[in-house]
Image (cartoon, rainbow, N blue to C red):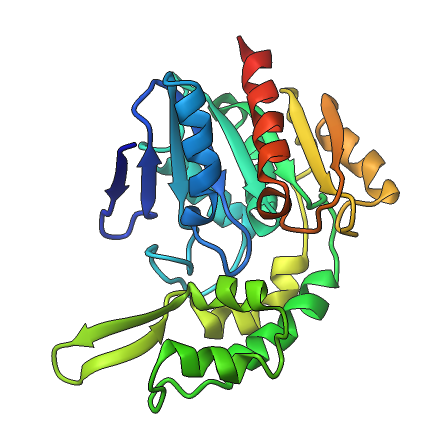
Length: 278
């Protein structure tokens, strides 16, 4: 199936899967990239050729530009302003996981005419210190790898294994490690994500705020991993205040990365959301 990459200076990087007219836009979580949803997107488009899946690299991640600060509302406005993603003429099924889920919620609240159905994956409209608790050790471990002396990806994996014992988690993080050619300095390792900015803005990444009076009246599917604590009962009322048409779905045998733990179940949830639009 065709995968097309869009790279325009100062715009967010977007990979397209499928060439239909009905849009599904994916926003990844912290340390992720749009490519994290490629398998899901491929499954959707193979089952329904009318779809076009757009896999976005959010700012400071993947191939998208780096910034100087972190603000969910500013990121949401940037996503909404990019014409190849969301349009009033063709509102999209907007899917966001974790950090990307908070961006997606802000897009729906601030630009409701661009979103036909919102899917929020294992995150809530609430401030949490879970981001700092979970990701600060990862940031420290990644920053501890000396890229100037690094000999191989295998060496990076061995160094990271001291702090990150799960091989799958290390593989996910090391997707961000690239070996590029520099005109003056030859081959060099670098991180694709803006590690320095992320490290200094973990509190903002865990935060949540909205403008008074904002409500999204469209359909919302709120997906939670059964083994995750990012979606809790005390989040239900705040969620329904902002998104009154919320349907909560809990996926068994899955943690925070629901789409990776249970891809078939997650794909089925998206297919139901798409079917409800017809």
